Image 1 (spheres, rainbow, N blue to C red):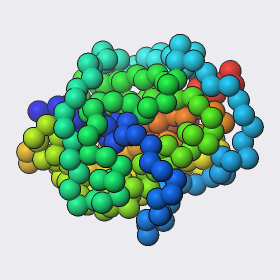
Image 2: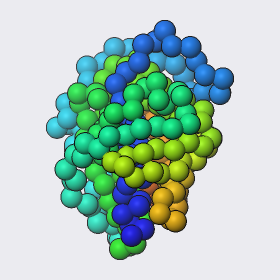
Image 3: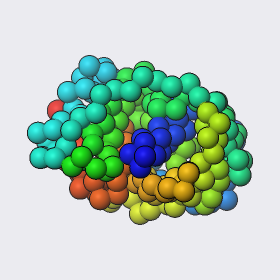
Length: 228
């Protein structure tokens, strides 16, 4: 049961990240931005990498070490998603496909389980203009960390959420975001750390068990940008 909860947690997070872009005319919230690093507006224009090229830059089992098993890609689910108690997230749109990815056209993803336990780690790579990547991921992190507690109802299942902005890893990439999410449902709680790093026209998002995210975020960025 706990593994299933963890999977749901990662899927719900990805659902928010897959919501369509909002107008830049929206007023910013009162919460401090979850973003650190340099803004993207001065970054040089670089052609995006294809999804095929991004696939080759994902971590694999040999990069992660022993005990990791790559999980098969899950079919996309289309559950109705409603956000309660967080107007900033509600304004982004309540309908999204759980388990989805960001809407950038160039993307790749890999999911791993560790040690036969409920510990999981998910890596996503995207490529687009630096400004589009920065705006897309920044809006979501700012909205989520701006609401300490709220509730998500996905496919009729209520999930209590708690979010906390975390210090982003300095010295990695051009911009960084990080947060800690606690998902509670059916008497069970799962903690998920999510860290995003933009490096030029690449965006890396690593989610999962906090210890696994901390262990592999640097390695993931190094492989993703090695041939840039």
